[in-house]
Image (tube, rainbow, N blue to C red; front, side, top):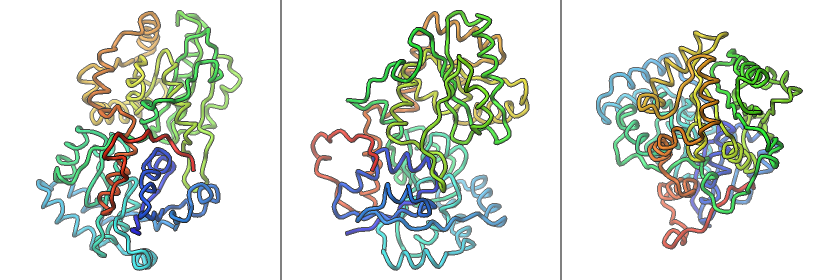
Length: 433
């Protein structure tokens, strides 16, 4: 029996690693034992869902960089020109990271074969990875979103798994990983879009009016003070004034970091449907169950137009060939819009999409309404561009990304892969334990 430490800091990691296939794949090898290091140890619902005879749940010892470590980290990102330089600078950083006694006891008790950071963008696992290195245990960082490398990883594991080839190049050019240290596995949370036998939701099954066009509006994290309700107000006004030329309904899909309260005023508006994940873990925040993943995929598939603020749902909409529109204006937060969407996202992970004109952008209310009407008249607009997004930014379209991530974890732990890897692998469905 070999033990794998897996850090779960947030509800999104619960979705990606524990419910989208990787954990189930790991446990399909009888010799594997998993220790989840997580704040979820204090959440009875989390423990009841995941603890078992081969899954142990223990506390994560969260870490925040000191000002000195942060300065060294920034200098590594800025000045390291080779992987060797990055490694050397990181070793200096690690000398300033304390090793919690509780982690030392865990390593001595379980003698793990591998330590996995479920979200290396965050600094909370830096002390775990530093402890692993001091005990000579290999580590793996599971980069959980396509934009994380351009935002700089705070936790530097020995190896990485990433979504696609673009991320692999970023790992080399931004964080100075060697190519052989990076494995492309795809996005487990997107597997649901490619699964055979998924539930065939229609608008009526989702509580929507099948006689109306559906505008799916996905909000963004922005900052906690950002108010995106102006866009809902504009869309309601355009529907009621018939500037939008078809009878339409709005589905509000809230970002996990958005504040639900500011949208409650729309719960009685006949044009608006609030769609919020049902599962909230007290210690880990919003997460998504398998039903939530399937429902989101169905909403994207059934939408006539997807509207968002440069978020990952653009990739999801491209998979389902759903017409997509980016919003890059705000009458109430213009400076924040310029900073966050235009000045940050459009110049980072969205840069290629913007420069290649792969998705249209509304810079004011007039363009917003005009582009919605164009899409409703001709859904095939930008179809070739959406196919390009799937090819370059999704890449893996076989529904097996969760399986690949699980297999890479097993490989790095020195465990034999399940037998079906040699033959066509059986379909792995999203699992709610």
